[in-house]
Image (cartoon, rainbow, N blue to C red; front, side, top):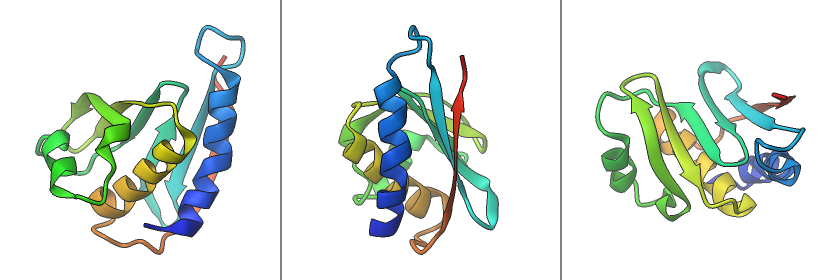
Length: 125
């Protein structure tokens, strides 16, 4: 997994979690886009990870295929083939950062781990 990417993922995720749940006045979303691959993205809110899902098959089966993806931190809640997958998460900054890094590298970029991220933090309130 990419230590540089995980280090870049942590601060915005931490900020989203610190803002609290949607019922608070601040409802933050961190969007991570892979530089040079505008179709590869993930978003983190206080309680969900939403990401592009480029495949047709069941994401739970795809995640199980990749031992490097820590699925203990997430649970699949919704998905559409070749569109997106949404996961509830543990609320642990490190677990979510590691999951997103592994998901992007393994599922979306076919094992390419040397990617750069563009980060946007947005208040949805």
